[in-house]
Length: 553
Ligand SMILES: [Zn+2]
Image (cartoon, rainbow, N blue to C red; front, side, top):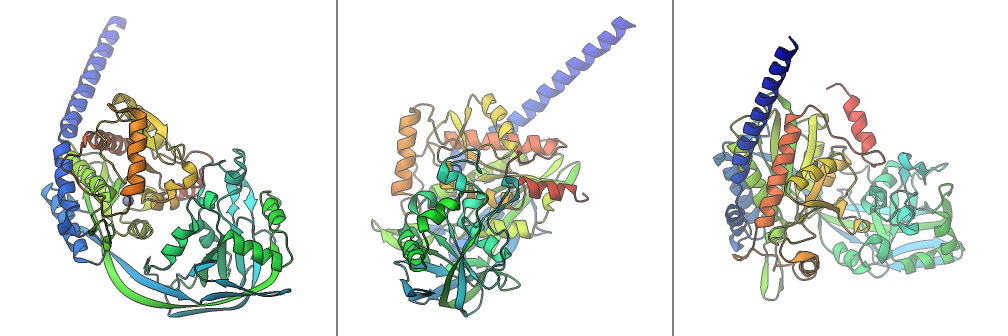
């Protein structure tokens, strides 16, 4: 009897290993369909001049979204938005013209801040005019409410109708203290977008962030230039009247002048703001300003296809890549077409290759796989934000988002660099898969710059869905780390968001093949398992995920 059961056990083991093996062979076959020449072929078209830089609302949009739809259709993938490959994304183009001066009245007399030199401001309110008259100003430290860090800059405070002014980034960054927030890694609380959102939740009339180059991650000129462009916004039912009437920045010098005029010590108050017991301080000062806006309404599109799941089709794994770029703009070195070869032509190509690999599987993954090419990432992650606020699959049934962003072809890579390393359980899966490819996982080296908040995976994170942003970025297999760093640096300096970010027939896309295969393995693993990965303890997104997962499935 004992011998017999041992024999049965052995038989099970053999058949198990055999089926594992055949399972692996079947996946390997699909993975082999991902080829460098096919990735390059897609990029050579998507980043060609004929696609005119893929700007939303232009002919370039029409070409791009039809190219993607046709590619998905050809692979036999189903439309993912209730029978359609497209999701309408209604937007508004808003050109804000703020008053030349921000007028401040202190108990020691008036102070006018000059537009562009000392202050910038815009509004998200979709109305032709916003007017702020004598709104009392309050210094709210960092303007953060973070329960998981036991931090609340708005405690014992009512800011309704008032204008809040605050420091950029978070206290952990400033002190480089790892016991405060996440040390020098910027948390979402450090990002200006969060600060604006929180001020609106608190009912403030206006919100002003004090700019500092180091903690902001960019110089004043970036804000100055950005302020003069029209911005795209998602159309909102309430016309964004729930947002502050104005959202702005002032230079550090302007802030110092303002505090001095109000009879307050800027250094002392900024230092006090680094402590959790900080109490907001009224400046006994008022601010007035006016913004006249021109509005234009139009609709752009996300493109989405799916491979319906075989067992739990109501649950899904999402792959994202933004399809948009800057279109035709100011000439640089005689070229005016912003082709976006690496940003985001190659990632889009890899999204299509991912879709191809899944379509080659001879079995159905248990969960549904969604391929989502989003619009208007360059304008502030709008397409992905629209999707997560209008999801086709409920977010508590969305297992994860795997995002493709800015792939530079640098040949085979030894690393997988994760931006936002340590945020979620997905990192552990990536580690295992990278190892199987003979690669290692490394943390993106400048988490203080907040790159984590600047691509579409973040829209998913913000709404609680675990998401991943990674790629080979640190060590070329043949040229080493120094060459890779220099190459990436050269890209940031000379090609990023410039017409010279183009496709080249000499590009070596072998590293993109590695990344894409890893992404397919990851998505497939997630599709086959029953679990839902989560954010790690301490992540600012965990509370939201925990809450939605408790809701009835
Ligand atoms: Zn991009």
